[in-house]
Image 1 (cartoon, one colour):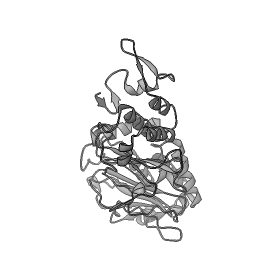
Image 2 (cartoon, one colour):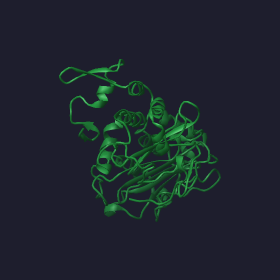
Image 3 (tube, helix red, strand yellow):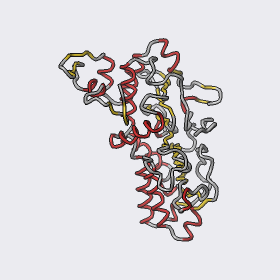
Image 4 (cartoon, one colour):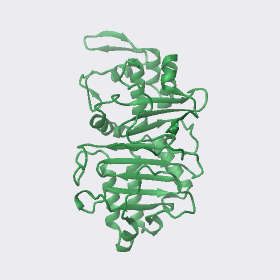
Length: 350
């Protein structure tokens, strides 16, 4: 089935087919009746975590040997595989769209993905996937850790410019189930000053509005000459100085603008994940515990619209690298003591 921006070119696609009726029977085209499997029928009517359970239950023993792992599985070069994150990687070998998965399983994976992403962002995320991967399920892979329905579990989806998680709060004290990654190369490298077509650039636009509100002294504190290594998202912890401009030095109107930046950062994701980020940040002191940095090297267009910037707290890192195209690394917990800092930071690739 041909896809464009994640949508079928046919007016009634498989996703609509699976969701049409609770009975598992739908009328398509000329009126012929088709049966939907019980697994797919149950999965598409529930939360993403429930769909992960149905997906896991549908896997054969041979499939589980490839994409299912123990909760604390370690992989050489990755450390704890469940917490690994990168800008361009595959957690397992089979592509989602490959014959390794049945059509129903592929549909359940898509349902999980759409459940993680806020509905307002489905179209934009599908645009990113089309531009960077050629379409949903191409050059993208999944893994499931633990046993859904019997204890802790986590679903991880990876690909170019993508690491997403669905864990049903199995990973305690951690937002998103662990570190995530998103990015977009809408037009390739060095995407001109305005980053045309980049679905995430509006986040940087919001951050730069805050920069424009800063006075000279604040800008001097916020500006850092060299961009920090983008994959360095380990927590600093409380009591340690965070480079950049402390949020406590912002005025009330500047803090209000920064709060809008935070909302821009979390709005692509489902409400429960947004709430989790807010709760984690509140527990460590809120935005007042954070610092804001704008990196002045690699300024595309030399326009002082900073492409690279970072919002960081004791257990909060949101690193936005916009040059030469967008890479965003995210690591959020409610305490720096949380064990998310395994060696998941290595081997960045464009």
